[in-house]
Image (cartoon, rainbow, N blue to C red; front, side):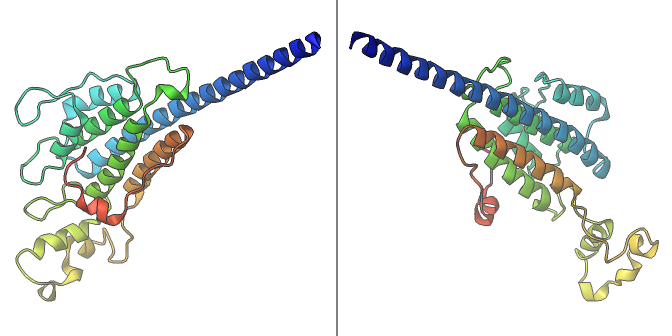
Length: 252
């Protein structure tokens, strides 16, 4: 009887240790995959920034470009710009809300957007802690907040305009659409000949050309990677509906 009890104790102790080892292995693997998600996100951000600068060439600083991309791809967090000529900021929310300011003429708007996004990812993925052995090293709350913010940012990039009714960022729009909107400030559509729009007239574009979806594809991939990270923490990503996206004024 004594030996039987000893066997039972040893058996369950062994099973418990095995379960713990399996659990730790799974969590370590999850941590590795979450880290991979982060690396893919920042690579996508670098590609996005290059595309955004080409489409909006007056909205970024060429002298800052190399340093900014080095920060993004080398996992540094050393770029801090002034907001409204005040002290430099380290808060991603201030950069993002500044990038989407509709009332002011923002110099280097692309840069503020990219830095804000990078700092948001850096914070959400806890990159100040270099060695994350398990998935529990990540904050679900921070990832969920950034996941919701990224959905809002994708929406705002696509639709936000300044007080002059001009898009803050040109991404999906064809050039003839921008030209048409400018003309419609002074007249109605009935008084405009679409065939005489410069980009149509010179055969640079067609009225039947599809919108440029490549920008939204990149941000959608970022959103997908963040969703995967959240699922690795045994949670469901919080997806926002249209009403919530429209209702967001500030990035939180």
